[in-house]
Amino acid sequence: MKRVLHAAGVALTAAALCLTTATSAGAAAGAIILNGQAIQDPSGCYNVPGWPAVVDNQTDQVVTVLGNDDCTGPVNGTVGPGEMGTFPFGASVFVP
Image 1 (tube, rainbow, N blue to C red):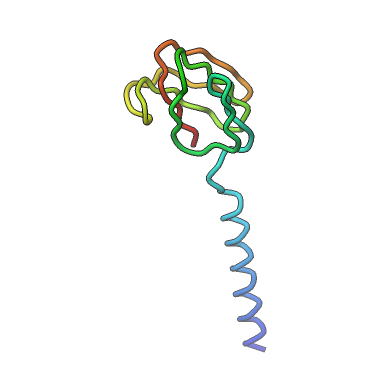
Image 2: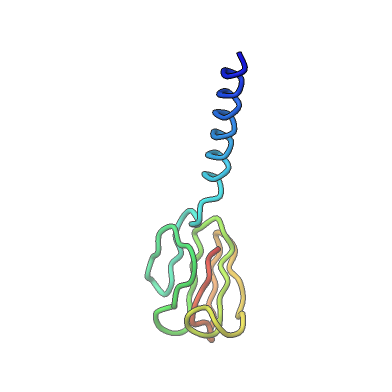
């Protein structure tokens, strides 16, 4: 009986860990469109092609717009889910 209870406990713990890991996936659901270029399920840093930075956020995450390439420099602003923004000095975006 102890082995059955132990096996059941291990199985439940494993199932709980799988469910927890699945909900914390690394990519945002949806797409961001940077000056007409769509990036599906983005995660991390993206340099914006061209100038000014036009960011159309069709994801479920807030996108941060930064002033230099490779997500460096000052924060120029944020674009919430379902919003769009134009940033004259935006050069890159970060999606958590």
